[in-house]
Amino acid sequence: MKFGKDSGNTANHADAQESRDEMREMAEAISLYRSAMHHVAEKRAARLGQVVARPAKSMRMRLLLVPALGAALAVAVMAPILTHSHARPTPAHSETAARIMQPAQEVAQASVNDTELMDRINSDLTQDVPDALEPLAGLSEQTTTTTTTSSEKN
Amino acid sequence: MEEIAGTELAIEKKEHAVLELADFDEVVRVYRPRILRFLLSSLTDRDVAEALTQECFLKAWTARHQFRGDSSLSTWLTRIAVNLMRDHLRSRSLRFWQKTRGTALDVMDVSDWIPDGRSSPESVALARAQVAAMWKAVDQLSAHQRSVFVLRFVEEMELDEIAGTIGMNLSTVKSHLYRALAILRERMGGTK
Image (cartoon, rainbow over all chains, first blue to last red):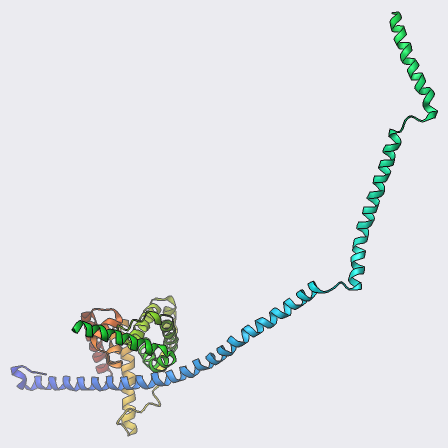
């Protein structure tokens, strides 16, 4: 650092000396601060590395375990469904099925009977007039002829 | 000829950077103290500094293909850390933490630190007191002043490198550094 011509002056010289001392102290404080920060950060980083390494291991285990557990769960869920769909019906199942099917068969049978009955009624109705009613048929014919003759008379 | 040599050097640099990034565990091991140191000094909060250090390496890992090797790996990582710090300072959560971090200065636990060249208990105690005073003084700087100061005097980066890392003009960096030193000098002088 250069000083002016009046640097010989005692007051200025003292000021400059003080300033230099201050700067030296400042530089020393900064150097100590840097050293302390390096120390603290290295210590913390080492601790942080240990903390991070542990979850990394557990994460690796988790990566292996999760698919395995998932597969086991899938097998546990799918196996009963698949075996059920491929299984032959057991006697118990047949009985249950028969019990379920029985009312339907009864309904079907009943509907067949109803149809037969309706057919029978239909055929009875379309039959010719029974013999016992034949005189009535003749009478009706007479009535018509009488009506025609009387009208002719008029 | 010079152009070709420059291109070759750039390719070599890039290849070296890619190779360096390939072993990411080693990158983390080597650079974690540096990034943590920068964030710790800049934020003066241990928990936040550690969280952001982790995030910094996570970001670096996800963006490793974007690293072109234009700057050193150290500068690239520091730039990520600076951006994370900036985002964090902007976030609302920090305002909450700033109010509640009453014990943040405990981070400067230098009880087991022995400064070089000092053997007497008195000189060690004096050094620790100087560091504590400096820590308090740095904590009172503005975010920009603190970042520039830390990068220059703790990370020992060149001024143009700091400008590139922080994304500031060289003159702005110089201005921040000048003001930071003036404030520290005043505060440190006041502690005597």
